[in-house]
Length: 361
Image 1 (cartoon, rainbow, N blue to C red):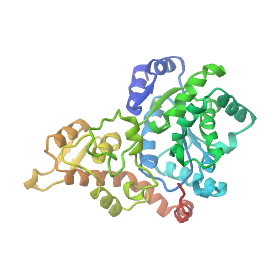
Image 2: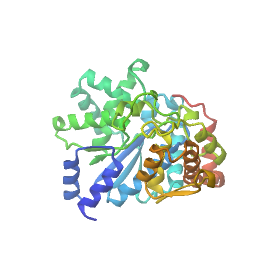
Image 3: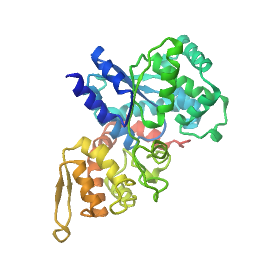
Image 4: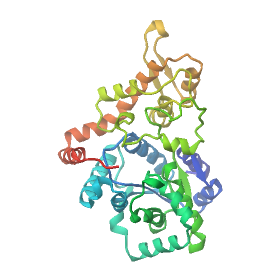
């Protein structure tokens, strides 16, 4: 595959790429660049984790990238996930791996890495070096990567988090940080400190944050996808079950949640249904069929997201018809994972364990 084709694949993955010229140089000089994404083992898997991550991975692997999925168990411990119990956190991590496998991620093509297995003397030395080369103000701003605001920090250990995440990047020897936009502050901190530590800057390819079923927090505002902070604040979150679709939701539950979702007529900016159509459905399928009665125009098939958006913007597509089609498509994507956890004995036990736990934010 030529460099330009690889660049197009990465542009389709990243909503923000820092920088395009560095990414091109990377592809020109390295056949198989290394990229990573990290996850705290906590709670049940949702749509961004179980479907979107797997879809993005397919394009990354097509581009020849070697990918590492970082199971950040110590990070979850510091962030008090699963009550700060490392044993429970580790079991959730095993559940995470099972979800990814069920979603079609081949363990032979992706490396699963436990943070606790890699945190050696060199790792912690680098944590200290990064801290010595970062201002208190910059480190405090980066605390948002934990999904918490500054006033919510109650333990000194939580201030280690940005330094540790930055250390991950160099410790894993990655060329590309391919995480969500909500993690960009740690990735940019890595780019800033790299020259001072005599290390190579990572390329940052930040993917889109899927919108909550409730839409943006400020529905009356004119929103654009480039409004990163608002996008992060309004992302689909496991901590808000009713605004989130889980990989274990039944078809009935998915239909019910989507039916209650925010979807104002002709609104193409603050619209979870269009958001999922663009970033998930048209990434997974070549077309989208809208079933509707003849008196309302009859069935219609859209061959691209652009066609769908245009029809909705012009009022040719009713919100309820769009919702029905989105619910059907999402159920098709969730079903293989849901079925795996219903039929596979080990997977079912892991699911029951995670489901039984009190999820701590």
